[in-house]
Length: 131
Image (tube, helix red, strand yellow):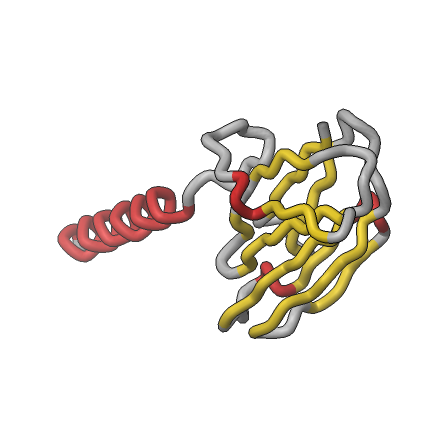
C-alpha cells in the first residue's frame, strides 16, 4: 500500500511539473521580447496577424494608434479553447474555424489603448498596445 502511494505521488509531481514547464507564460502584461513582424501597413490600414493554437502568438504586439486596423486571427488545426475567441472591449466574440483566417475590423484606437483578445475561458490571451 505504501509503495502505491509513493508511485502515485511521484506520477502527480512529474505530470504537474511537465504541465507547468510546457504551458509557458500567458500573462499579456509581461513586456517580453516583441517581434513586430506580425504588423503591416497596407492601403492606409494596419494589419496585425495573430496565430491561435494552444494560445495566441505573439502575446504582446505594439501597434500604431489612430489608424484603422484589421486583426487577422490565423488558425491551423485549432481545436482547443483558443478557438472560442473574444475581444471584450469591442463586444466581439466568435468561434474560429479549425483552419483559416478570421478578419476583425478594429476602429482607430487612441494612443495608450490596450486591446485584449482572449479565449472564452480566459486561459489564453494576447494584448495589442496602441502607441
